[in-house]
Length: 218
Image (cartoon, rainbow, N blue to C red; front, side, top):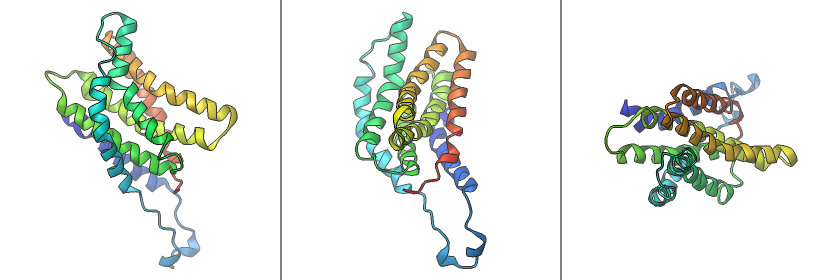
C-alpha cells in the first residue's frame, strides 16, 4: 500500500502524458513517407527534472510553514491545520513558479514541471512519515496531488491565455483546488470517509478532463 504513496504520482504523470500523446493528432496522410517533414514533438522531460530540483528548497520551507496552524479538534482550526500542512503552501510554491519564471511556458511544459515538483514532494512526505499511516496519507493525499498536477497548470494557462470573466473564473478555480483538497482531508478527519472519497474523485475526474488540452508545444 505504501508503494502508492511513494510512486503513485510519478507513475500517474507518466501514464497521463503517455495517454495524452496517444490521443494527439497524427501527421497528415501525405507526410507519412517523408520522415523529415513529420512534426517532431518531444516531451519536455527536462521540465520534470527542473520541477524536482525546485521542490528541494521548497521541501525545507514547507516543514515549518505547515506548522503555522496548530493541530486542533475544533472544525475551523482543524480545516486550517490540514490546509496549511498538506495543500496551501505546496500549491503556493507551485503558483510562485508558474506566475514568475514559467509564466510564458506552454501548458505541456507547465504540466511536466508540476509533475516533477509534486512527485518529489509526495516522495519526501511518504519517506518522512512516522508511525502507522491511514488511508488519507496512503491513498487520498497522493490522489489529490495527482489531480493538482494537471488542474493547477491547466487553470493557470487558461487564466493567462484568456481575459475578462474567463480569466477571473480560472483564477478562482485555481485557488479552489487546494481549498477542495483540504476539504477532502477535513471530511476524512471528521469520519466522513465516503464524502471525502467523493470529493477526491470529483477532483480526479476534473484533472482527467484536462488531458485533451495538453497538446500545445510552446
